[in-house]
Image 1: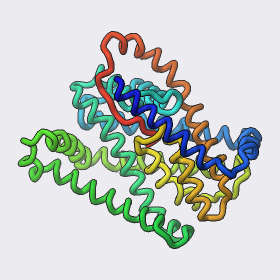
Image 2 (image 1 turned 90 degrees about the vertical axis):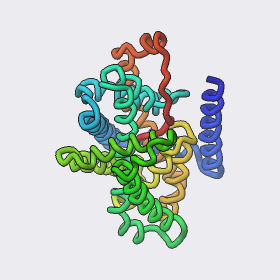
Image 3 (image 1 turned 180 degrees about the vertical axis):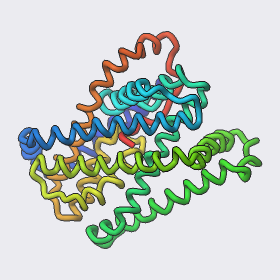
Image 4 (image 1 turned 45 degrees about the vertical axis):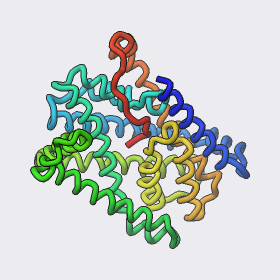
Length: 326
């Protein structure tokens, strides 16, 4: 427990430190005015799209569990997804929201392994959706970003994403079975076997790809809409270039719910396209607050699941990274 508290404190310190560094030399009052005077109609539309996104997240996770396990009920998938978002965004905790999803799913899954793999593969589907979206946005990327390491870093991330997926699929086949006797590789190979099952499920793989891409396209639309709400000049193409690396980098488990890292990516990328740092930070903060607002109903959902009482009785033995929206 002490180790988890130390890690949580370190993440909190990194988030706070990054936000402090980014805010130096910027008119914080101006950012506050932009957010407080945001157009409520545009903000409402963005929140509605985030609610739709939450439904798609639950549907994607449920479809994955149907392929590898006995499947989650639709209502459970929605409730558990809301709980995960609540603990990731609204009440960042020592144990990440994915761990709560694993624990809740294990109460209805055929096996605990199936519950864990379902959440991990759902995360993988989100990351692969980012890789696909990054590939789609490459023409806009090369047109809008100036020459420099950022452009080629994103291209390298796309290549690594496809290469890593190929390696996992190979390990999930007969070629990986010879390495299964080694415990560290056994866990990866077992997960890869479930990933291979999903990739070979013809009725599931295309819907999963479509949902993963649509989920991130909704985030692109939300960023563009929130930009309009606070009066920035961000375009759809700029959002399409910024969102994939922002989500990918901010998902690294080094800060609290991506705070700090997300703002840094926005300032760097949008700054390279001509937007002021105050506009980029204001947009990122408003997006983060929108995620918090959408995550709030996860608190009552957690209570309806009987989570807090059952948690105290059984203890939460599963752990995962405290990441932001996949």
